Image 1 (tube, rainbow, N blue to C red):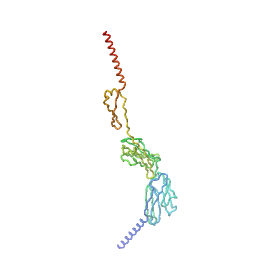
Image 2: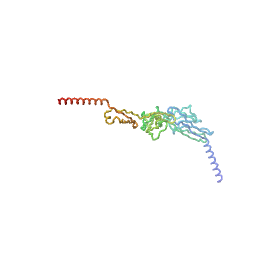
Image 3: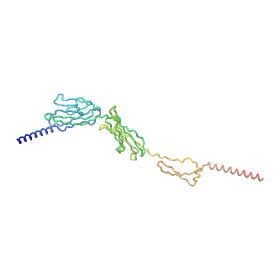
Image 4: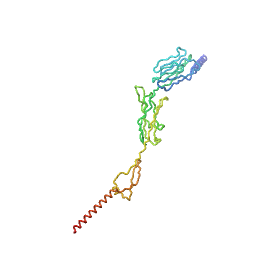
Amino acid sequence: MHRILGIQCGFQVLLLTSIFAEMVNSLRDVYVTVPTAVRRGDTALLICHYDLEGDALYSVKWYKGRQEFYGYTPKEMPTMKIFTIAGIEIIKSLSNESHITLADVQLVSSGRYSCEVTVDAPSFHTFISSADMEVVELPHHRPAIVGTRPKYRIRDSVRANCTSRLSKPAANLTWSINNLPVNPSYVKHHKALKSHEHNLETAVIGIQFVTNRYHFIDGKLKLKCLATIHDIYIQSTEKSLEEEKPKIYTTKTPNVNYMNFHLNYPHDQNPTMYSIDAFGRKNSYETEFYEPESSYTSKASYSSIVELLVNLLTIAALILYL
């Protein structure tokens, strides 16, 4: 009796194992191809891949989230069923048991899409695969760089912001200097600004650094801001900042009273004068000082007066003597 029961149990296990193996092998390689990002207003092709392993197909169903919006059942009439969901518009002529085409996708069309495949009797084995799709609203303008000056000197501080306005999602912004990635410590990230009126976002990123000689190549620093959204949008803006060279000033000998210099510096000493350039270096040159002609004229007049006074005193003395 126990032997008979053992044989029956073993037979049932083999039967169940056989059925399970048949169910597993009857449907293979189920996965979906869904675009990661689609421009708003474009069409989107969603594909459900599967291998029935020779079994008959019972149904294929598509869901957005948990809501079914498309069904294909070959043994029913009509074979194609479409259910209304906001943001989902199916092109029937481009849809079948493995493909569906969505027309004029909108921002509300974003979400998780799932394909459910079921084989026919007796197993009715079902498998489901999912993937996310995001509908993108692209910016209408390139990113804008503000806050820079045309020229900078070595060791000047550069401060700037880059803004990419009104997109969904917010653009990913990155900086580069002379086409090389910047030091992360230079970058200041800001939270995206949301426009409740348009349901769009504005991205802002800042940069601040102190210029060095290696920043300027042939006297120019190229500051670039790159904006990307997935793999369907890439735009950049570049500003060229010039290096401001130090100014070299030349000094002229001022107009001075030469008589004062004559008193301090005799003609035979040839005093040395100095000028200071823009770098603080001392340039020397010798200056000769000459007594103006007016001084000689003054001495001649003085001698004449003295001579006249002497003559007058001599005449007066002779008169008194006589």
